[in-house]
Length: 518
Ligand code: FE
Ligand code: CA
Image 1 (tube, rainbow, N blue to C red):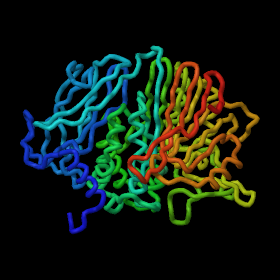
Image 2 (cartoon, helix red, strand yellow):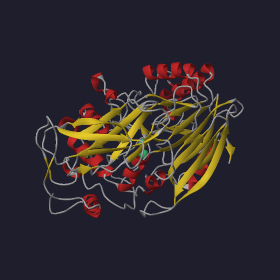
Image 3 (tube, rainbow, N blue to C red):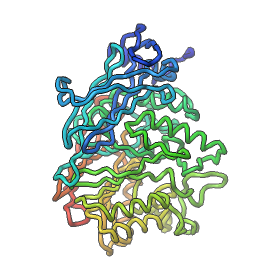
């Protein structure tokens, strides 16, 4: 640390002191592990669970006594104990074991717990030496084909500087079974106005820098509470790496981009409750996958960043997005793909095979057409599905052809809530409704004003609701006969204890596409 302690670190140290974190040397236990010394409490980044199946889930933590400066551990493996119990008091242990926190994975721990009962609530925690983590609540998915109900929350976009994670504090109290986080978990850059706190470091480029950025975010108490409340499933968007990146291409066309992406991908894995098998050959991170919730729901979790075609009609000497009119004919190129050919095929096959009552497409961004009309000309933002309209048409056709039951598309990215009917021909209201879309607003990241969202809605009548001024998340209560969506909005993100309320709610009846206002 230099003379100036960044505000983020100051706030963190204040919180750590408030938690009573001891700052004395403490030997780590560990049979077979090299000796290590913790200068202070190692569970500063909390705990998490994720990727639930009928027989288990992942539990995660990372040892980081000095989280904002590389973690603070010597480069030796450390043995960590874990427990999963039926009760919050840990009297009835369901499973336990040891795991090794390795320096090459930033001393993170990803335990794939197995052998649990389906559709049950569990509690978990970690121990190292005489230190104990907080405890978290997780639940297993229902057995294949079993009747079920699912309370699912989804959220996205949490620029740290623009607000406190007050929405996460409330999300933790919703009693949901599962939380889907749809990207922009960190922001690599500082932007926006009226900051309540600072990153305190320049945009990360190296593995060490991305680790420190994740640590800054994960030290947030309200985010930790949200992780501890329920298992998460996660996909990412651009800011986990760099604004508007596409596949192997960064926004500035920097020739070292793939090295930066590799660092960012690894740091992401180290900080998320993922199965480590997501890490594949050639630097691929296989986030897309299917999560089943009994007979009730199949969640098709998608990744629209890693495999996409480059954005068309970019600005001169740039990658990334643009807003383009009809002169950009490349936008209509049928070979453009947002998911990549392999993921498109995988999704099409999965929609055909799904026997679930509801099929949720869980992805990053606004699916529906959102033309921006300027002087009677329809313009489109090329970073989202509007930049890849042929790929969107293929997906809509796949929904029609595969007859997937009750498709519902959820998304984030655009820092505004959009509720839309997805028609067979996306901007033709006369064509049948084939899916319903709920694109949720951001946790903190600032969104468009009412003038902008009103204009968008007027120009795109399939969008039934638009609001860019709320920050919050969406809770879906999914039952066999209907899906209810509640838009939860916090009063402000500038105060850590701001209240939450329901801004609007909507219903989708099974067997009938389209939205009923609740
Ligand atoms: Fe965002
Ligand atoms: Ca984004």
